[in-house]
Length: 455
Image 1 (cartoon, rainbow, N blue to C red):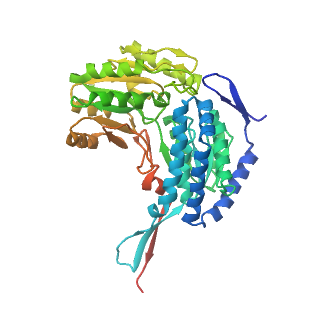
Image 2 (cartoon, rainbow, N blue to C red):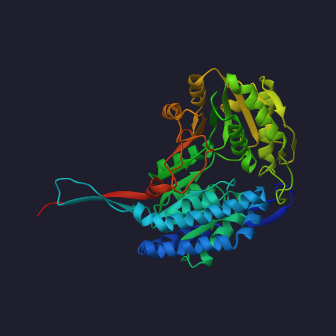
Image 3 (tube, rainbow, N blue to C red):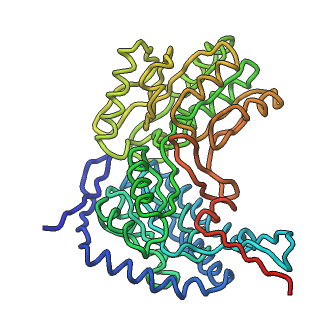
């Protein structure tokens, strides 16, 4: 008997839709179609592919309200954030439509040859395993550069957002992309192992947990497949004593509480220099206490539910452990179903569970540091290395400290965020490879050396 998946509204807990799992034969048929389509898709010019993506961007803007409402219904993001997510996807389409050909221009390398160059060729079929927290953006973040490079893709989305997965496939189809360029699989993780063992799949990209990344990387390595992984994060936000505390506090709360705290690159650990710690904490607490939680479809709601009840339960367990370890609860801490109050913890020890583990929800943890050296040491005292932020008026100091932080991105006096023009990705247990910008599109390619000897 085939398995079924349910899309459940996390705020109302009502079942939105059920999806029947595709059979092995159906998945194989999708892979066969993808393989066949890629042979002709790769022959299309950048201009032809780009025009389709410009049309896709227009489609997203024309349908933004409907698509945003779907995002909010399936995973609970407040509607204003869902609208922004759709807009960001449209911008991604425009960026690579305009820049992919330039980014993938051959590199001409001076050697003793008549000509030597490095060209960038697509890997073929890209298998993607994507999470639920940004059900549209995560998909467009990888698929636009991957397809502009001449690849095709099979998407294995998170089961609780299969409605979004189908809507994305429909969007690609609606503007005229060939059948097989983009396909969403309605399947569980057991299909991944079989697909990675198939020689027709060229690589895998995954955004998700450390555990999922380890499993997929092992499968890819066993089958000698390229992989790009963006995994968990426990980002540090360092507030030095000369920082603009109003701006730093506002950015800290926005970074930690957006998308109900379900953001890999969110500031999760606030490392604050002792002279300003009390004032910073007071400002952060006031902002958190003012946040209205409730129905994510209402305009005045600032934070919605977590995407699933079990995720809220996990965060509740982490909170209780942290309190048992000596942390002080300053705000929030209550859970109702998937709704978790915006929570602020003070006096968080570097040994605490909320310092050592990733907390995926609206929980901010403040730790006092004696000076900038301790801030960097504690920021690096994590198995994760996705990103970090530094708040200081001394830009020379910020530049020096940024070089010491073991992360993939450092933002100074700004909220860490993804941008089509800049690469994103982590180090350590936060993964490897990059998405976005030139580095991102090239990670969906194979670099080939062409050496032409002198005659």
